[in-house]
Amino acid sequence: MASHSMADTFAKRATQLREYIFSQPTSTFENNPWAVANAIDEFAESQGRMMIFKKAKLDVAQAQLVAQQPAPRTILEFGTFVGKSAVAWGAVLRDIHGENVPEDVNVYTFEVDPLMVSLSRDLIKLAGLQDVVHVLEGPASESLKKLHAEGKVASVDMAFFDHWEEFYLPDLQLIEDLKLFRVGSLAIADNTDFPGAPDYLKYVKAGGRGVAGSVKYESQSFTTESQPSKPSIVEVSNVVAI
Image 1: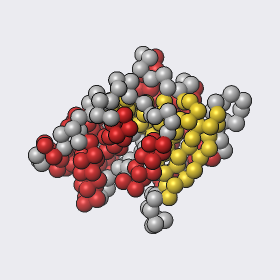
Image 2: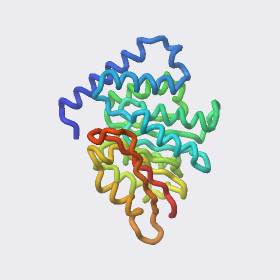
Image 3: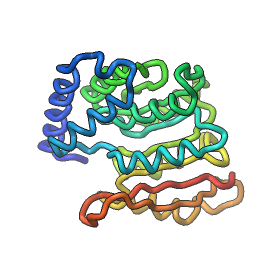
Image 4: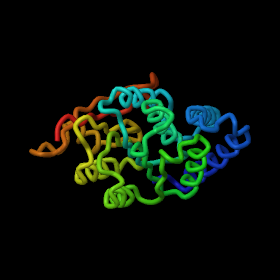
């Protein structure tokens, strides 16, 4: 878990990001999710200490989603932080489905920090994605169980993991246990190289639980940076059998 000083830094950066975005003319960002996502990238590049899903990694994930058949309709995101990737997923779905996104196309993103929840909701609304991207406050596993029980999530096209690495595998297995994946679904994980998610990585690289009737994966590591000292891997796991 992040140290107290790290949490303070993240809170300070989030407050500064809010000021940076909302000090500019709203016309710059209104109903323009890519403008919002790019502005967050620009702010993070200038300020540092912002653990966002950067453009090079996003490009890898976007290519997977654009190629997915049938086209993705439901995305789960574990770890919202300031909302950069949540906005980007909404933008990708809008690009795929058109300006009038169908009602059954949704991003559900999970976050425990109230400050980040508030900021990301405001950025999502500014981007015009409030009907597509939904921020749920609280532990991801409990939020997902509730969505499933309410019938709001019956199938998942992509699950994105970018929260506490120790929860990557339990949350992936929860999706399996709820039988939400289909053949062709994607599990995409950030930071599997640093700080590292060894249990998750071993699991998807091995193909899953390895028992009859369980989800089977084919997994590939995509390197997006030339500097080995920096986190650079995006792990993309495709569901090839259930």
